[in-house]
Length: 71
Image (cartoon, rainbow, N blue to C red; front, side, top):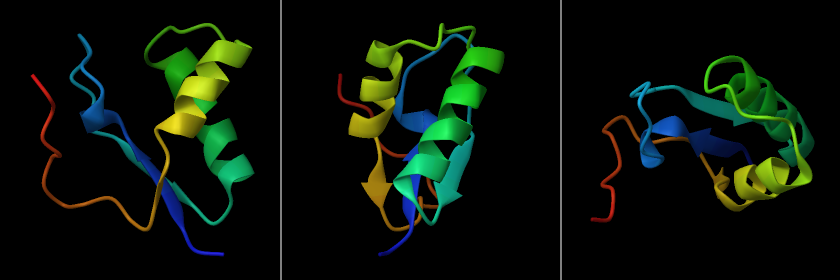
């Protein structure tokens, strides 16, 4: 199993967060991303949030440059 990542730069927010999280397992990444979403972005830890985070995960490592956002 390869590394997985989630990149806050892909999600528009008022915080303009540039954090990217990387882990060896989906479970580890999910828990770290939920903690970040609750603490920094003031989301509630809900099944919907966890589902959204899972769907935003990618295989590999985050790119150095910010990803393009769709308009």
